Length: 422
Image 1 (cartoon, one colour):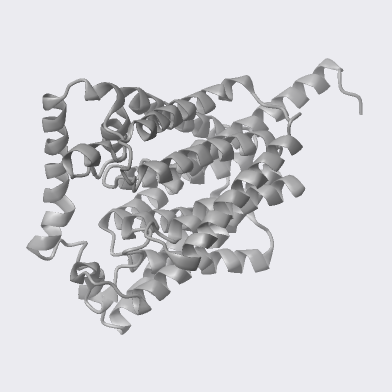
Image 2 (image 1 turned 90 degrees about the vertical axis):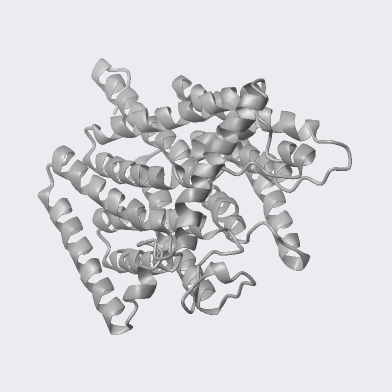
């Protein structure tokens, strides 16, 4: 349990709390964030020392190598920044990518069993209550100097902090994993907790008014149902999932009608005015064409990109592309892009292997992580979140699934060959 406690502390401090505090911090908030990051580094070192003799499958060196390539290119751009230039993002992203590399190594070394994975899943799912509550509170009581951040009387949850798009992606992840946790746990108290987490997460997610978030959760639930239908022999699971979704739809519809929120809820979703069309669609195509023009002017930038602040340093403008793949390509170049796509491919491959596992419980976990992975793709294609917390969960958790699966296979082979004594 000591190892799992360390992992939970790391995920809580680094992946969630720091993300929600936003970029523009001052005073005691800034001090808290620095303390968290220092604590994170020390706890990470303790975890690695504690698990130095752990079993590490050789094939997972690819995860570490791909991430390390991205980290080195980020470090290269940080070293190239002009003297006296105040970096707004490069230093932060260097710490972020280095942090993910450390988390990946820690999880790889310390997660041993299916129970560990279940505990991580329960933890991430359960945080939806806290994060959804923060989103609701921020939407109702938060303030912004930008009128564009409001939809009717509501502030878009996450605005001027972690960002509405990022927050909606996190809350969709907590929703899907809460549903998985609800289906897998046998304890009534936990079932109630995860139901509340789904409701609060989606209430907060709706208040982000993210169109991508709306289609993302629909896709995740659809993929989960299809995979349960095809891969799982347990009819009860998919029937329960269907009932849950129908119940949530009915509850949501009643609340919308009762509080007369139809126009407000679907205002952005239906692209109700020219400003929203320009923000959601036109501006993204402008970013894509801007990237093409930059490549045409400086083809050598294809190799290592501009860096997070490099283009700003020479042109007083920032590369900002609402697509994780193109954003990675523009900032860090083709080698980082190759490594980034490699991480996506490894995650998809190992989640697919988990879904086909003979262990039914592990297979169900794989199904819901795959469903959340598909849902994330909606955000990935419309959001510049190449350093996003959410996708790195998908890069890290498949390592745990396959490690547990390989460990079980090794144990079974040893028993069959007579090398393990009862």
